[in-house]
View 1 (cartoon, helix red, strand yellow):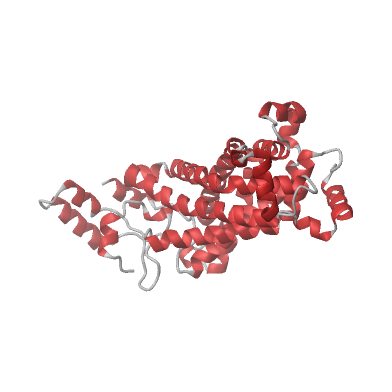
View 2 (spheres, one colour):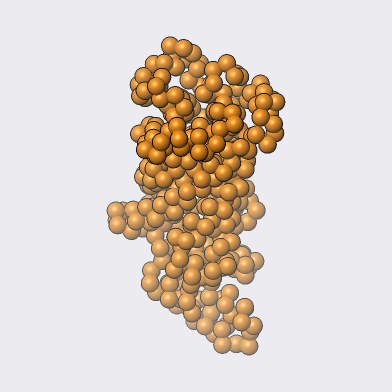
Length: 365
């Protein structure tokens, strides 16, 4: 595949972090690069000649271009906005189990109580702030993750980017989620209040002004620290474990190289890797999730009040089984939708096999 000259000059990130291909420069290309390195060129020019750049196909989106990041942003909107809205009934029961475990004793009884008191329509109460909030969060989460992953890899350089790729996944996802939660927090505050206080409001349209009147504009960000505490570890686990799991699947469980696998198989692997990653995410972030629900439901409540009322055991376990099912399914579906959109616009799916030792040695030259 032909690479544009500008992309060859600017890309420092190892191709395996994004690319589905595992092929590397030919001997002739290596000899040409070595010859260029011995010529009277500047050190930066010589270094660029050894970079293994990711592919960019004619007629398709160029990797790391503005169009690439725009596509990742749209994919994030679709993956997070649609999936979180689809599981609104589960989220509704989970939030009420966290707030009032006496009334909502279990998953089945929780659905029964909601059906009896609010009817079928009650299962989707708060879907508008859910859709808008998690669409905004998904746009920032996936778009900035791709940006920070390349940015930190460029800073590290080819050798250290390959050696410490998991740290780059963790740093990139944490940076992206920090921004994404700023976009999500106001919608999350209104959503929880609408879902856990019947009669407070019908949805976002009347719930937002009522919330601001009651709590003030800054009240929309009352839960930002617990939200960071929930979402940043969740997202770090979500992206780093997904990338690692998918790499392991292609390396040990699939006999065919990734670039030779069919697109449906690649998307199936994305879903499976996402589901397993989602289980880990739910466990890591659950205590903070309980705090977010408690603080947004009770006016003037503090973290100390939440710990005192829920207890440490309740903080870690209340609503956890339901959240594991919900987040596992949610995360698997998100990665499936995100990678499906990337395939649709001509980009490779996320994750893959790390380069062969010979290629890693080439990056060190």
